[in-house]
Image (tube, rainbow, N blue to C red):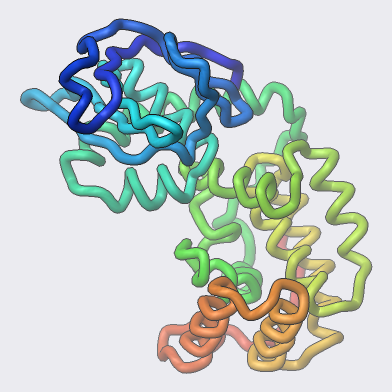
Length: 310
């Protein structure tokens, strides 16, 4: 994605004194790929997390405008119309797929999602198609459905604690469907924010450094990176499965059960990252996976023979 600008109607700062400010000032908002936002007439540089809230206004079946409130040294509001609104919201998801995609767009009221989701996802697809030209990922004719069902369940079960704690789908490799534009942004964001990985060579180098390790913590993270790499478009499915197979075989040599794997993962998480909210979510997810009747842990045994079917 390249930098771009959208036209906006600025409403001035909020609060009692807003009535003394001019209304309806027309200007532009400049948006950068690296989470920088500047507005005509203001010298402050904002980021996506400076967005305070949204209001959506629609007429009949179409969007009339999206009103955005920004927080900072001063609080400003602006309105974005039609294509400008869609591009702005897609830019927000590009910066933070969890906050603006999974939580704001897909968990919001029906009218909000109904008027924004389709055009916003179309914009994301366009940017992702442009990104694919730069990734230079090999061609891959393998589909998820062609992979042995039990192996699919097994690699999803390995990452289930983390995916459940993050509020994504435990039945999907990487946590979301591969061809959902929102899923691709989620995978890209996790690699960027947690690993500082933004390119295919960086991901491959990281996996190569980790996959030969015999530490449970590293092997689990290698499997997770394979899933996020596939989800983000940096790896083919075949490449990601090869990583999962190799790391999975090693994992079965260092622990013997889902319970042992989960306890080892939590010990390592606490040792490296502390007893934080992330730990508590993972601890609760692990307990649920042990007890739930429909748990992935009960669908496939940990020590099942891993066989390549691709």
